[in-house]
Image (cartoon, rainbow, N blue to C red; front, top):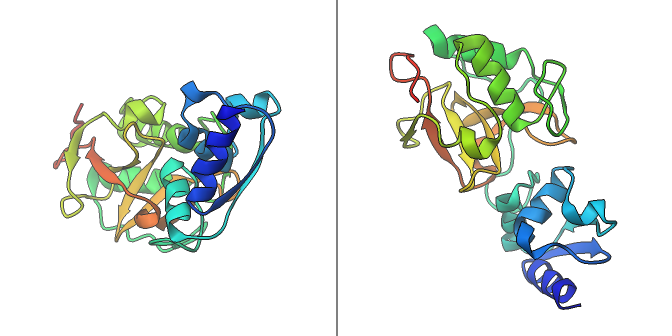
Length: 217
């Protein structure tokens, strides 16, 4: 029962409510496990009939902790999502960066399915892999943890359309920066592929295309 008690204290102490039954696997990491539940992805616990669901309520700290775990929750806690299935998309890129944005936009509104790599459905890393291969001839295979190691780190001020937007170290989520503080990504099963603010969680940027559009590995 020690594992169950630890989960309850961790989650409710951060301002969230967890509905569960049974044990979670400590080796999986509690916060990561919660993030997978929020994204609708399979978890070790849920496969055993463990975690049944999670709801965010209470403090901004709780909502931010869940966002850092991978949950894309609208409202509450810093920087809610912006845009929608066809939200505003400033396209001021040329060359290969312009092609990446144009290819990415073709998939707005498609469904999120965990592990899917297109062309009909995607998860976050599957969308990145598909778009860069089609538009730039660049191989950036899933998962997001590996994709976020590609290219070179750039600051927010240096970020250009076509760069990767990464969340977490190791990365639990990834999308495509389109400029104007926005990204295009496969968010979760509820939202699918859409445009949102990059600020729904702490993030960083990776340039995989190079200043001139040449691949950076």
